[in-house]
Image (cartoon, rainbow over the protein chains, first blue to last red):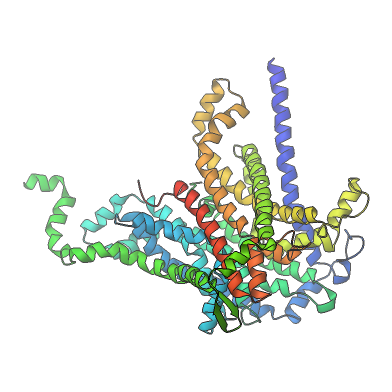
Amino acid sequence: MSRRRKSGKAGSLALRYLVLGSWALFCVVPIIWFLTIGLRPRTEIVLPQPLYLPTFTLDAWNMIWSSWPMGSYLRNSLIAIFGSVIIDLLLAIPAAYSLARYKYRFREDIGFYILSTRMMAPAVVAIPIFFLFKTFGLLDSVWALMLIYAAMNLSLVTWIVRSYMLDIPPEIEDAARTDGASDLRILVSIIVPMCLPGIITAGVIAVIFAINEFLFTLLIASTQNAYTLSVALANFTGGSDGIIYNAIAMVAFIAFVPVLLLVVAIQKHLSRGLTMGAVKG
Amino acid sequence: MAEAIAANPGRAARVARSPLKRRRSPLQRKAFPYLLVAPAVIYLLGITFYPGLYAIYQSLFRVKFNSWTFIGLDNYSKLLGDNEFWASLWNTFLMGSGALLIEFVIALTLAAFAYRDPFIRSWRILFLLPMLFMPSAVSFLWKLAFNDGRVVSDILMRIGFIDRPLDFLGDIWLARLSLIITDVWQWTPFLFVIFVAALQGQDAEIEEAARLDGARWSQIFWNISLPMLKPIIAVALVLRGIDIVTMFTSIFIITGGTPGGATETMSYFIYRTGFKRFDFGYASAASVLLLALTVIIAQTFVKRFFRSGRD
């Protein structure tokens, strides 16, 4: 009896590892294959028979820097993304503190209004926003992208930071208050340092969503003045030659490396961030 | 009295400093939390509420370049009789629910297998990798694999499943399947990382007690872990569901709505109507209906699963 149970247990362990291992392969193999796409010549990509052992070359790397304004794409991405995260933090930290610490009328409604903007479909507001930015002459500019990314991520930054603020025992603030510190001072010199992990998590997740953003950028950007990496990819086509996949793969990995490093840095907080604080992982 | 103060120094300090605190009027104190939250709310109103109103207003007009003609609800009545619109709604539902269901089942299975396993935990990052690529890049990856590079067909032929290459993007169901696989590949990790964290966060002692009582691993998972996980599953599915309903990037890059509109989602319908056919009034009417749909989803689920303050 006990032996049968044991063999069953070993069997179930093997099954588990088989399932997990297959999925891990399914995740990793396409990525490695895509990396080889980035490192092969264009003539070895779109063929009647796929080629699994291609020639190794840095053509794509040289091409993105010489044939395309890769520097502008990178600069646009960096300005729009970091600008948007700074706007988000400046707006979200006070808002989160207000939602986490004070009791007042409409607090719930305000909190849910902020949350519900996360549920807004980009396509719904795309046309009005296009006209709005057209009116202000902001089309094809990184500033417009910065404002859009900030709006898109504000709800999740607010809710993540709020979740971490709720973890701070109120007694600490009471003690500071009795020492005569003003509410604003408490926020700046006690609360913010104490929920720094939450603020960093929120910032990292906002950066990732901003890098990924596609629809708004597609509508607003029309030249290298505002193209970000995400949308520049879609323009890597050589007229009659079709899509230039090795350049696309190369740019994909250029964007992937910093995201990977950021995610590894906040790995423990990732699930909490992705659920806007609902899961404390 | 002196003793009482000595026993409660905090209170003593508060009493002593109370004149200082009083300098702010009660009105100021009451307004303070509103002032903290106001900038964020105003910003969001400007960039979501105003556009929402604008879309409703514009949907009542026929917009040809700069000339707006008021036509009342004509756009809406035309929309309700537009087969392409209904097809986009149906495609959104079909591909969205398909992708969400597959992602949910796979993520939950993987999470159940992985969460108490230190070996897997140390390799968890492997399972997250697809999520860390830009969706536009992932779309190109699968476009190349399914169609342009014929890699998937080639592999299936080598295994012996099929004997001639499949036209993945030319067939209605295969095109939909390709988009679903693209979404599943990239976003199953999103649900997986949330489920693993939630399962790990549960009290291991309850599971241990059940195990000592002779419960099997599967019984423990179904009867103890899963019910406790319900609220978090709901949150994760709502967040993923909203992103799926608004699916756009993969459609734009992989199929462009082809073949014959079989993969056109609502987002893509709005984009095509507005920015390819420049029929902005009509596109706005479709936006308003999509907005109504997302508001219904948000109102139904969100309030139930998120709490805004300390209870």
